Length: 159
Image (cartoon, rainbow, N blue to C red; front, side):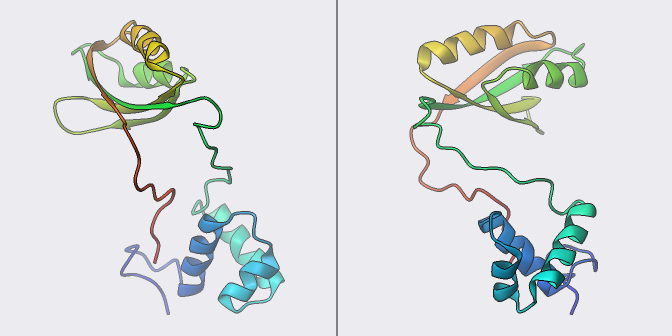
């Protein structure tokens, strides 16, 4: 059976969706472990995973780090309001080069971008904001500091 309801295409079947979900939960799973979850032998799982990777469904594998244990205590969302002459490509390239930046989202609304940043402290955030405000195309920013994160999915719901 092809899964068309959730994804709007017929390229994925139910086994593919279950494999994607299992990989997202634990990308370090062996093909044998994945096979036991979906009812296939390891070589068949290997072939399916390689096909999903080659078709772009799996963009990569990464470890999720604990920022607090690494001394990155402060998470902030920064709304960036750009000037009319802003070059979005140049802006996103310049901002992406800042090591504190985790995500850049182009958004609809008053602001042009919302950025997620992690820093060691409010002083470090202040320094980052100073560097960010010197980026060509920035008119102003508005910062929201995260107090806690009661829920974080860490992936995309595929089931």
